[in-house]
Every structure is written in C-alpha cells, then in structure tokens.
Amino acid sequence: MKPVIVPVAFGTTSRALETYDVIDQAIKTRYPGIEVRWAWSSRMVRDAMKKKGRHFPHPHEVLADLKDEGKEWAVVQSLHLICGHEFQRLLEEVGGGAPRVSMGLPLITSSEDCQWVADALGSMVSMREGEATLFIGHGTDHPAWTTYFALSTMLKNAYGAQVFTGVVEGFPEAEDVVAEVKAAGFKRVKIVPLMLVAGVHYLEDLAGDEEDSWKNLFAAEGIDVTLVDRGIGYIPEVVRLFMRHIEEAMAMVLDSEVV
Image (tube, rainbow, N blue to C red; front, top):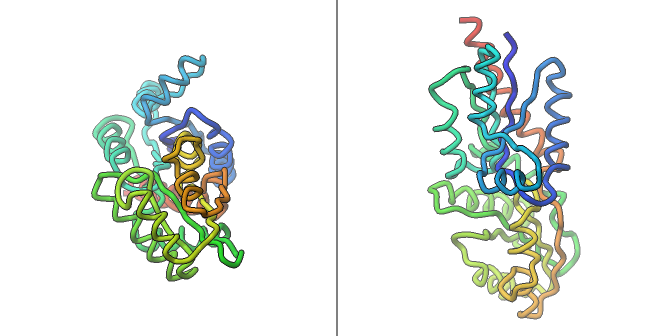
C-alpha cells in the first residue's frame, strides 16, 4: 500500500501559504500517485486560524484520520529547520501508533545538510561593495542551537567575512551582532530571514517599527538596511533538500515492505 505523505509545518498567521504551496507542488510533482495531507504543529497558529474560519489540522488529527481509513503507512515530513523543541514534540506525537510512521528529518540535520543550505543561500549574499549580508534565524534554547553556528561557519568559509548570522531568540544577542557588523566597517546590511517563511518574526522582530527591531537597531548605528521579505522556503535548492529527506523516509517504507 502506498504511504500518505504528511508535511508538517509549524505554521504562521501571516503570508505563509504561498511558500507552502511551492513545497506542496514539488512533492506532488515528485510523487504524482501519492496522496499529500498537510498538518500544522503550532497550537497558537491553529487557534488563530480557527478564529478566521479555517481549520489547520494537527498531526495527530491527520494520523487519526489515516488510521480510520485503514492506511498502513505515513511519511511524516518535518518542515522545521533544525531538530529543536518543535521537532522533538512532533516525534513524541506521531510515534507508537497506527498508521506506521517513517519520519522525514528537518532541513539541517547533518554536516551535508548544513553545507547544502550554505550553498543554497549563496544567491542571497549581497554583491554590493561595502554591504554585509545578515541571515537571521528564529533561535532556540534547545541543544540544537549550535546548528546556527555550524551554518555560520560554512557561510563565512564560502562567502567571506561580509556574511553574518544572528537569531531572534537566544545567543548571540541582536545588539552584539549589530556591534560586530559595525566594527567590521560596514555601512549597509542586507537582512535575510533564515526562516522557512517570512512570518510574524520577520514582520515584528526584523522589520518592525519598535526601537529594538533589528532594522532600527542598525539604523540607530547609522547603518542602512535592506530587508528581504521572503523566507528561504521558496529557494529551489532548499525545497530539493526537503525532497531528499522525503525520499530517505520513503526508502524506509519500501525497505520495510520488502522485508
């Protein structure tokens, strides 16, 4: 029996669906004969969308439906960027029941993934003289926070000292990154959200009007800011890496059926 592919996004209350549509189309193009059902891991997002009259099912709801329909396998593909808290909760939620689950890992789970993403982000690095490029992720207090530093090292190795990495939550603090960019002598910075979608964190923390937004912290230091208003989920090579993780999870299903 063919498995059902269940992409699981954290979700966002802002303009994310167009990015998810890109990923959805890529999955359906790669697996034209396999059903795809989306799930959303953020309870806050699902509650907010419910108030707008839209139902975004949680992973356990999708799996319960598949069980009732007699489905034997689901390939659950995490659309998280790293193996942080959200991914750990997802593992706990989908394990141990029916249907059987083969898990597709988050975007960056190995050194090969990290290098893949660093290569994919090359198109976002500014070529303007005197302009730094700053990739800003969500951040986490999970041990997986070190993933950002591995990626930062690979980005600097590939594109040089004009590339910086920061996070909205956790280390390093925004003020420290701004000071680092200023100390390096840059008068302009291009900010790229290192997030699947440019959602609420982009609108509030990166581009917001509050004085502690990244945009305004740089402005206070006399550094001009250019903001990229799209997440990395639309970059073809990023989507291809998610496809590779789905293929790996699908291979486990096929191997199980052979055994």
